Amino acid sequence: MSAPRTPRKALVIGGGIAGPVTALALRRAGIEAEVFEAYGTSAEGIGGTFMIAPNGLAALAAVGLAEQVDGVGQLIERMVMEDGKGGTFAEFPVGGRAMRRAELYEVLQRRLREEGLSVRYGKRLVGVKESPTGVTARFADGSTADGDLLIGTDGTRSVVRELIDPAAPGPQYTGLIGVGGYSAHRLDGARGRGETMHFAQGGQAFFGFWALPDGAGTAWFSNIPQPEQLTSEQARRVSQEDWLALARKVHAEDLPARDVLAEADAATVEVFPRLEIMPSVPHWYRDRLVLVGDSVHAPSNSSGQGVSLAVESAVELARCLESHPGLPGALAAYEAARRPVVEEVAAKAAAVNNRKASAGAGV
Image (cartoon, rainbow, N blue to C red; front, side, top):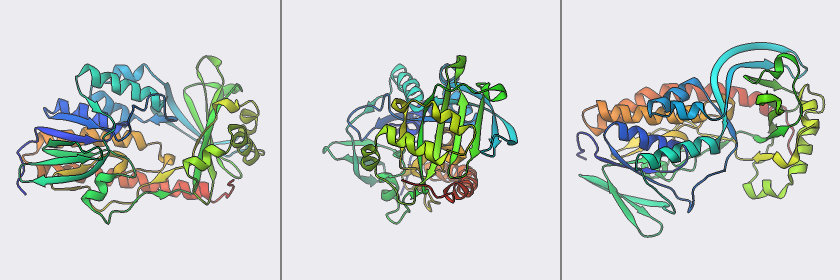
């Protein structure tokens, strides 16, 4: 199928984090972009806390967001690995930022508006039609959109991935659920430094924690083994108090988790039952369709790299489209640059997940 030397317009399917970054990166490469989101409204205020690693911060800086991102969240300069009994066995520098998803989402939406890039909501992709000169996206509401390239940033349950390859694998459950929140507990000594994030493998579950700025308490999360994956509806049926009680139970013998959870506020507890990974996807692109972010590479949350890899891939795709003569060569270069990186991260995170899940708690 023939293709333009450089795409003039891209249809970006998915309006979460990777989609807006992709659109911003394309704008800098001289390519028009329009973002389509399946949900009827924006995701403001939705989502938990994650860390953006230095590579992710560099990618956001590449689309002009360095100053804005530095203004949200909390600087994390180092990570400390602990044994769940209060002992430390490893420490290494990081230089990332911990923030709520909603904070980054707000930054991205503001920049999209400033640059005149639109997000069209209620546009659930149901099919595409390709021709020698372009691609047409078909949406569930009967509308269509035309472009030179269609980019799937639509998450682990990607419709675009299935259109590229109906036999492509879907997401795999990690065997873990995420529970997290905030505590009034103040960490002592070196643990009280707000720029340090701590990870401890307890007797039954994995625990992460860090001091909030200005002595405001402690942020915490736990990855609790759960053999059978829960739906979001099933997770909501369990009260915040009961989720906190479960976290307290599995960490009853772990320090400092026990003390942090003793002062935790149940009203702040959030649950993430879909901790999933993407296995290796055979085909990242086909003709005028290509994947970015969680739709093609979603490492375990154990990697601390999910968001960072997604925004990094968005920037790399735009760079390849700008620098390579022709769409096939650009997409091949994009995959060649990114696949080895993301699969190495995914493999290391999977090994960590296996250790976490082997503790065997669950609800």
